[in-house]
Each structure stands twice: as C-alpha cells, then as structure tokens.
Length: 112
Length: 112
Image 1 (tube, rainbow over the protein chains, first blue to last red):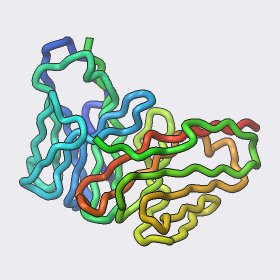
Image 2 (image 1 turned 90 degrees about the vertical axis):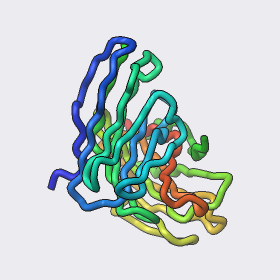
Image 3 (image 1 turned 120 degrees about the horizontal axis):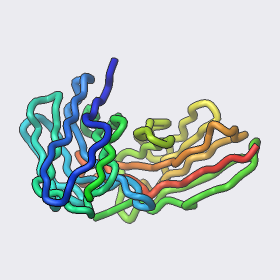
Image 4 (image 1 turned 180 degrees about the horizontal axis):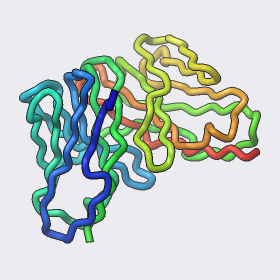
C-alpha cells in the first residue's frame, strides 16, 4: 500500500522557472493538503482540497496554484519560482473532517 | 495565519527520562493529532484525539485532549534513543474542520 506519493523528491529551479509538484494517494481519501516546511516554522498550509473539485487557500497561498485533478491527485504549481519558495513541500491526505492526515515523504525544492 | 503554540521548542534529555510537551490554541479545536518527524521523512501520525478530556496511549506515548478544547499534551515515558525527532501537534478548528493546522514542533534529543 503506497499511501501518499510525491514526485519529484528533489528539484532545483532557477528564479522565474515554473514547475508542478505532483501528489497522489491510494487510500480513497476525500481531503488533500499541501504544506511547506521551513526551519523553525513548522508546517504551514499552502492550499487544501476538502473534496474533488474544490480547493481553498491556506495560510501561505501566494505564489502557488493547485489543481484537484480527481479524487486521487492534487498538484501544486509554482508559476514563477522565487528564492523564498525554497522549502520542503509535503502533501497529505485524510478522510476529511475530524480525521487524521497521512503524509508523503516530501519534495525538497531549491530555487536559485 | 494561525499556528499552534507548541512548547518547549527543544529538549535534550537522558535515556530513560520522561518527556512532556504541550500545544495551545486561541480557538477551540475538534481534533488534536500528534506527529513525529524523523530527518528526511514526512510526519508520521502517533496519536489522534477526538473528544475533550480524552486520554489515549500508544506504547510509551500518552496524549490528552484538554478539557477547554484549546490545548493538548503529549508524554513519552522512559525515553530511548529512537525517540529522537521533531514532534508536532496538529488540530482541526471547530469553525473550519476541513483545515489541519500544525504547531511549530518540539525537537527532542535523547542521549544514551
């Protein structure tokens, strides 16, 4: 059982480049999340999707877009990468309300 | 955006000692979750709490959902070297149960 799978695991971008981080879950979960983790900041919510076809902003959405392609997949796009977006990005999923979330292994992104 | 206040920020203890950490919020939460993160990995769920006053154990770990619904506690008894990592609390607010918010983390170091 794969759980939550993120690709790629590592990425280096130049300032201004764009890219999409992919996330897929095989647990039939309704809700999916994108977080970023920076040293000393814990995990901050970028966007989340409570169900297929819906997305909502989290705490730090600026500079990002998301797509809930179907129930399994939730992608995060950086249209014009900036050094401030250097971080570790985690995708997570859960059944939905009042339930625990499961995480992928993360994408380590460096913007130079 | 809201983040949960987690304390202490870091702990350095000797093997065999007990550990206590806590998490507080300014708003009422419906769910409290405790995660552990090891280097290079995503957070892994340790304990989930769903009712005020609930006390739940998972091996040497015990967590409680505070009566006020604004705090939670995690205790680790008889610590061992493999307990090393960052411990995060997370919760779902009563007023927005689609969003999972994380604390800033407690970094635990255990010395043999």
